[in-house]
Amino acid sequence: MQGHLTLDGQTVAAQGYEIHAGRSSWAADQKSPIILSDGSLDGLVSDCNQGFGTYLHGIFDRPETALRICQWAGAKEIEAYDHRAAQERAIDRIADAIEQHLDLTLLWPDL
Image (cartoon, rainbow, N blue to C red; front, side, top):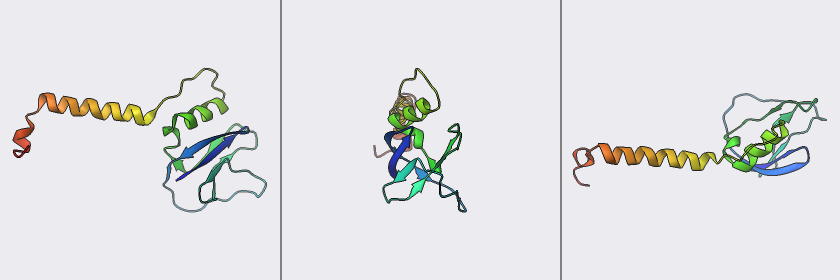
């Protein structure tokens, strides 16, 4: 799911996937900080502007989205963290270790 997240008037792209059961409801005067590409709303910011929740899993995977949420939450000095790039590097390290330490021709003779 893709959309946009707006916190304190600053908007960034947001994406993730949903896993939930049931339905949530909130008062008509409460604003959702996320507008999804299909026009539906997601998430809620507390009246005191101290809490934020969403059904979007993986929302912190985009560096600019994670950075925006952390800034909204009060982080003063923070560097963007690219979760997907870190994940790819970790997978590459595992693949390199497998190639280095296993004789893959024993597992797959047709290699």
